[in-house]
View 1 (tube, rainbow over the protein chains, first blue to last red):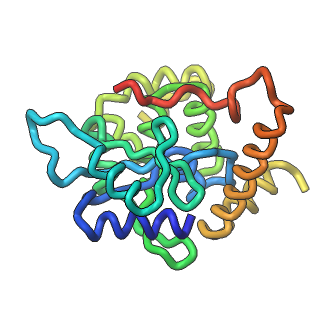
View 2 (view 1 turned 120 degrees about the horizontal axis):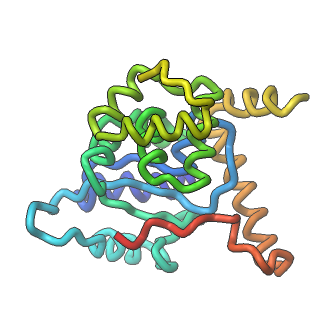
View 3 (view 1 turned 60 degrees about the vertical axis):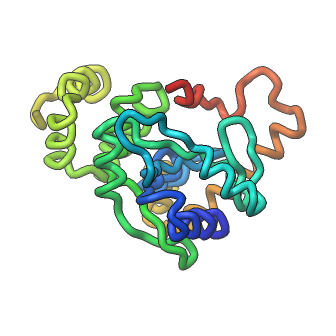
Length: 176
Length: 53
């Protein structure tokens, strides 16, 4: 992972990508017990992307291929980790990148999404494994519920959260 | 040790230590996949990635 993050940071220094944040299972691992995953989801701001232009990941792939990265389906393998680069899909994901938390892995600086943004994105994505992850965050007390509710309200996910509560948390509406 | 206690203990590790565990889990998954022991289920039981947007 150290080598992977060093390559991503170098790519950022070289201006290929802007701010980035780790999400998905590896991002969740910052807060929770490690759960098996085979890939690394990196949400990236693309400096040249602007309204009306198609977002292209080609500069990232070209940059990393020149430095030993190997393309494998939707991933590019760097330092042994298949990495999927994901430009933010909406305001929630953009906020998640912009408000990410600085940390380090083996001395290499990196950024991870906040627990509340990871939960909000998992709620929006809504697969079984996302629901399972949300439950882990809540049950292990890793989420600031006030902050989460604010994010959910801002991104119109409150009703989805209420449905989740009814289905998985015993229908409590104390937090809303 | 109970499962909740183990989960809490693992969650309290540093991010670097957790990443090392993730790497071991990933290597084990890959070894199992390469051995052909897991034939009927998708790799790691992962749902399809959101790569269709």
